[in-house]
Amino acid sequence: KQEVTQIPAALSVPEGENLVLNCSFTDSAIYNLQWFRQDPGKGLTSLLLIQSSQREQTSGRLNASLDKSSGRSTLYIAASQPGDSATYLCASQSTTDSWGKLQFGAGTQVVVTP
Amino acid sequence: NAGVTQTPKFQVLKTGQSMTLQCAQDMNHNSMYWYRQDPGMGLRLIYYSASEGTTDKGEVPNGYNVSRLNKREFSLRLESAAPSQTSVYFCASLVRGPTEAFFGQGTRLTVV
Image 1 (tube, chains in turn orange, yellow):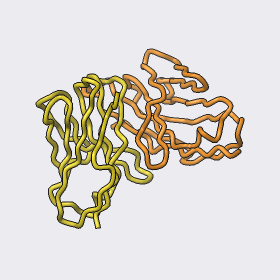
Image 2 (cartoon, each protein chain N blue to C red):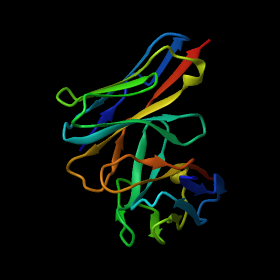
Image 3 (cartoon, helix red, strand yellow):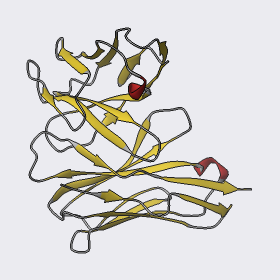
Image 4 (spheres, each protein chain N blue to C red):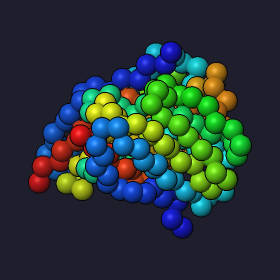
């Protein structure tokens, strides 16, 4: 069974610093990996999706990398802002499952201080 | 474009009461899912519907039932609520198979 882990569970950085968020998974047979943002009391917003054939995906200040062989994905947020404060979750979809079920990590709660 | 809409947003139930959580998507997606989110545990899959007319159990289905009413709507029913079902419930949808998933805003349920 796929296990997805996000360490640390919480992170606090000063404004302007680059954020590095980690996601590790035990089974490399993934179809893709998706990063989400969750604001307090809100739903999940999709940030980036990386296909297994890709090494990275970029959107504005966000860059996500994927290394299947080592079972790791990293989300980089450049020049962090207080508005980046949220919980970030990663989730994988497996090649052995045709139904698109997601396996989630528990998330990293990020606070960006002014 | 509303995306995935869940109702209600908040609900308090007494132990033993029943209720139905509603979910609708307007993206013409084939697959729909119900997840629950508990502190420190991430999201866990309760039930899913790969396509209209089909439903299947996920990781934590006990105490729940679902109905795929049509292609747009997927409901989750708690027949006899228990305090262990206090959680935040999310509905999600995607086109088909392993593709990008879209989530609703969640239903925050408390069972007392």
